[in-house]
Length: 105
Image (spheres, rainbow, N blue to C red):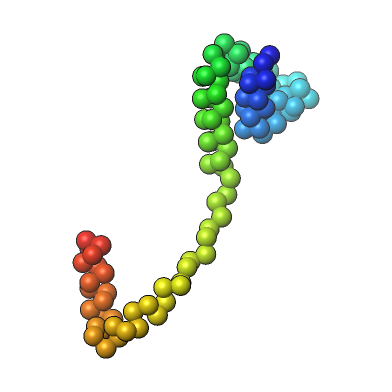
């Protein structure tokens, strides 16, 4: 197999969560079905041209990235106090109504 196919296979096996190694240890009917699915998938990947294999690899990477927990950024509050000069011109209620108007609510 080529390096590209090997890279795709490694990525696919990562998605499967090491099911392949578990399949080799177990001898149940379910395991045999899973092995045939994996084998079928591998055979299909090998038949694809290099460009399509790269697309499959990118798709698999996108699936892996969806599974990773996203870190939430802290809320920035560096704007606090920016309207201090307008305090005497507008009330908080007026500013709230204006903000709703800008948002289209």
